[in-house]
Length: 291
Image (cartoon, rainbow, N blue to C red; front, side, top):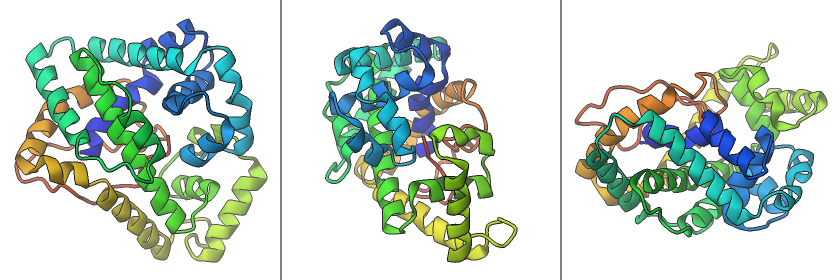
């Protein structure tokens, strides 16, 4: 399910219309829009909660953005910009789909959010508390975003429980499958990266050549499995038949969204598979989400 709703959310990071909407609101420059749009559900917050909730950015990078962005756009203005840009992006990508398709997908995705438990999930809770959109694409994007942040909160909890700090997490991703250039923009210094790799080596996750060990792969897979288990309740509540129907409906939308998402983006989305009738609600997959 994650591979089908995450692309819907991710247009906000990559589609030109989404970025233009932030610029029109006064949030020029990629990171201003990113931090303002993603943090806006929390209100006019300072850097500390965002450093904690976003997890993988160097503190000084967040401090540079917040609270300064609120002088350029209020949280309400940032929320309007992110929704406007996302809806315009999805409208361009899904114009061939009939409205009834989008309405049914939005109905089912919102039904999945009805099964959320938000205790301990700051970004998931903040997005779940926002008013639902008036139109199908607005409803669809907001529900996908709520589920995405809910899942991300659970992933951060699993990382914390495994005592894997933010830069160690990024260094692990680079060692496994991510081009370094995609993650160097998170604000960490070369010394931070080097020390993180050293800690992973001492821990037995990387070998002397910086390659992942079986111990590291097994330990990180346990984090991924814990993330999946923590994210399963909405789909268990929805039930397998409605979950399968939702996946069918999301499939063409997600595939369209993939056309604007770089294949090596930091989100770590794998290629979309086919949609078999007997799919599992929880499955193993590559390491994921760092955005």
